[in-house]
Amino acid sequence: MSSTQLPPVALWLALGGLFVVTIQWLRRPNVLAKLPGPPGGSWLFGHFKDIGGVNGIEFQKQIFSTYGPTTAIKGFMGSKIVFTLDPAVIHTVQIKEKEKFQRAKGPAILIRSIFGGGLLALPPDEHRVQRKLLNPVFNMKYLRELVK
Image (cartoon, rainbow, N blue to C red):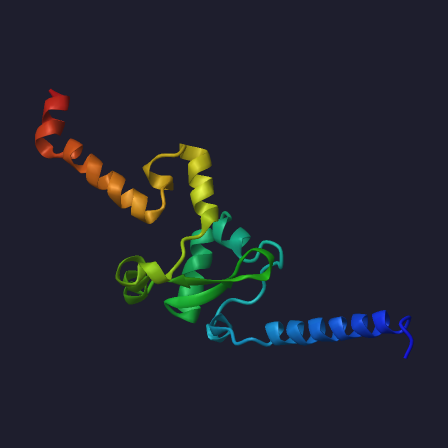
């Protein structure tokens, strides 16, 4: 074999490896694929136009009455999002095991851009510390003095 044939072989091996990795990634198990959900929704915007549109509340009622309290909806660019009303699931995610669930950065950025860098836009640990610092200010005795 001459040295001029080596680069094409390395290129084909690299492409073959990339192909195998891509197939493995596409065939990975996805828990959200088993959740029922509404069909349709665009690839780019998913169901956000339906949820946030004029008939958003009716769309949400229809989803939960058809598919139950926990469903998967389409998000931006083909992603799937869990949409739930189940109190046990909400308690687990928000309180019991919140360290295991990452908070999305998008909503925090949106809140920060609208309301500024206040208490609402802080990460959960910083929010808790700031809230504990502010709690004494909002006791009934102090509020009554402000109203007088």
